[in-house]
Length: 57
Image 1 (tube, rainbow, N blue to C red):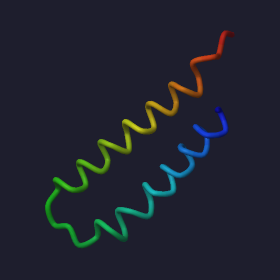
Image 2 (image 1 turned 180 degrees about the horizontal axis):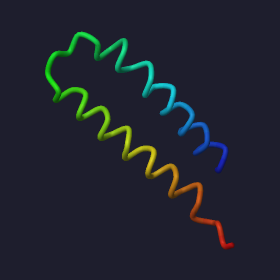
Image 3 (image 1 turned 90 degrees about the vertical axis):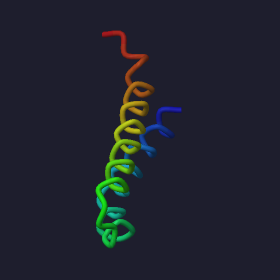
């Protein structure tokens, strides 16, 4: 399960670089990028919680 969440984080980081310069490059409004970065932040927070919840020491 930890491998899954690790892959999710890696994929999210890669998409954080690719999406703004490709798919959102023609969007002039800040609404699209705000929604994207908000959702990206939530995904990373959830993945980090899932990866670190079993740490006991």
